[in-house]
Amino acid sequence: MKRTKRTELRRLPRRGSHNADTINAILDSGFLAHVGFCVDRQPYVIPTLYGRDGKKLYLHGSAASRLLGKLETGILTCITVTLVDGLVLARSAFHHSMNYRSVVAFGTTHKIDEPAQKTRALRVISEHLIAGRWDDVRSPTEKELKATSVLEFSIEEASAKIRTGPPIDDEGDYGLSVWAGILPLALKAKPPVCDSRLTDGIKPPEYLLRSRHHDASTNELSAEKRRNQINN
Picture (cartoon, rainbow, N blue to C red):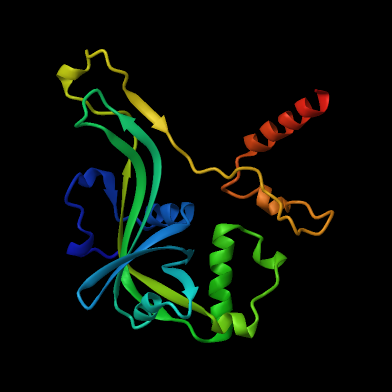
């Protein structure tokens, strides 16, 4: 991955990486990005979903969005993605931290106008979120495509930072009578909730239950609850 002073790792560089595989793995594990840019010296940061295809990230939103309209002009853009894996509780307030994986990427965005390319980019976003969903739903109409702004962000350079492991306390604090360790955190989907107007007989699709966000234990738990309700 290209490096300049923008992606130089200054603080705790041992936690950082410019390795493309490391960066892509983090981007593929996330789905929510924060997009930063400046307009007339006013900074903005907007959260948005994304999909990755090689060294490109695809973003979308309303064609009426003023901020997305500014991004369409090819202005310099910074995109960040952060995954929080745990809170790190130390024996002192100063050494509390968190375990995380993050990417900071720099580049420019441009608008996709050609309908076929636009549809393909939207499919990339959809498949990034829930693999298999795109083929199951109605495709966008011409009117819906016109109402949607789709942007292609080209990653010019990027860096990753990762923290893992237990707290690192001052040596003199290890004898304190204070609990220390890690509180693991993970983003997991709960059991699907059916829409009230769903046609009878339609069940959650298998690809949804196989989704990377899905926690199979929630199914087991809900099934156990249902069995108890029946038995009681």
